[in-house]
Length: 205
Ligand SMILES: [Zn+2]
Image (cartoon, rainbow, N blue to C red):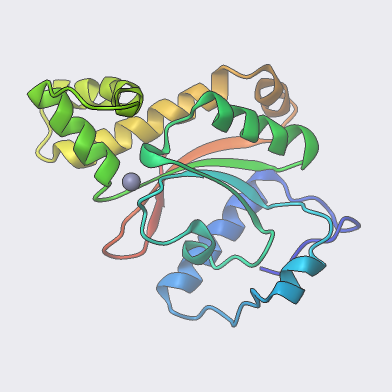
């Protein structure tokens, strides 16, 4: 994905999503053209106009830049355990919309998530955790409980999806900045799940 210069037309939300889907296909096909991540190339990205802002998980093994075959400056990344939308994460997304003109916000969960696995274990066993870990579990617990209600064959997969959908709903509703941009058609919020065994990103309806 060539870096977009300020003079170029801004992508629509749908065009931005299509670019990510195409980039993931290049990743699946192992047909990624050589991407220049050198200091000189990164430093040349003076104006920053990312194609998308992505809320991803810290233990997703590889970064979204690789999953979507993106170069320096193409993505704005927010990563933390369990891709939960924290207040700081939300502010980062608002920053992207307000100051960087980003057309697409994505919540990207992944299969085999260690953070969600831990949350399920703690919720099911009623464990106490040291330090600030309870904050993480509290954030993920509603998704665990909601997923359990449907009695799924695979509680981990169901919780991962429920958590992504929940964060998407929050991103779509709780921010006046993002609300206004959605109303104007400047921004779309989507959820997706990266399958670590195949490399494919499935965009949720
Ligand atoms: Zn994870």
